[in-house]
Length: 353
Ligand code: MRU
Picture 1: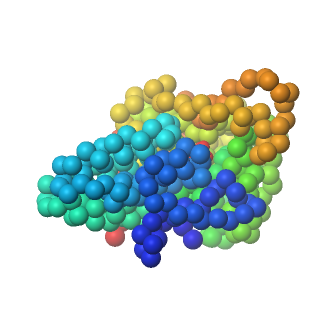
Picture 2: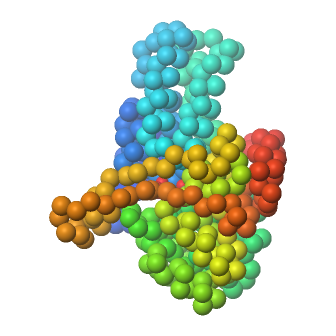
Picture 3: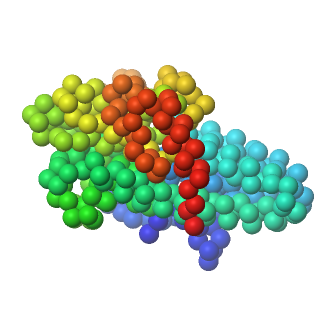
């Protein structure tokens, strides 16, 4: 089952509720763009490509909700929906990328009526979702060449089928290497505060029968220093034009530790996550989430009542720590400023159908 999909029987969006995994599987229905925005904010759906797809379908829902009879009135309603969806989470650029892609469809002069626009938005959301699966497969194929038989790979957060429409980015590389018959072992960072590693990545690896051990985030340096890690693979929520990589909080320290210990560090990044408009990672907006996520684990308080906490959801790893960046257009090496731009241009030429 895909993480995010359109139900063609009910004509509503359905998404796996990732807050409940691994203990419960629920796939609720969404019938308004406002509910989709809330689901993104509340992390029912999370992971940069998955929230991009959710937002694309959210725009299709917004078009159906609108009572506008003509194209111009519909466009005004869609611009409001775009604003609400884009504001749901600030760091992953896939959200704005998907919403803008839908606005471009909505302004296509060849569409004659409001109903034509409604149909085109649903078709485009479906295309975006299908492309996500296809390009993840291709990234997996490119990235698997970095993995040798017998490797131990350190992985952070969740970048698998659940973080995308299906398959995954960094975890997709691991799945591809496993599929090729390479014997690999994964060290899974638990990824505090929301435990995407412990809850989601461990679940996905277990389902596929890939050997792994869950580790506390602060054990990563220990294993790298002892020579027990061959490769670090992570995702990204936004990669700047110079190759600085924003990803789940804790990624920066992995990049530094990997460099210190001579371990290759590769983010796996669809080109939809590359923001060529931002020169460096310092310009990437970093989401701060509620302090309760740090003060509690699931429903259990773990700190004295009445204290405060800080909860940045992402950090930026400067490009000097990045060995290479796996994209659907191949693996990109420094100088990133030049080579990422070329990879984005190459990716635009790929035909997915
Ligand atoms: O806060 P989350 O769970 O949405 O963060 C997800 C990540 O940081 C992933 O590494 C990133 O989205 C890329 S994975 C496809």
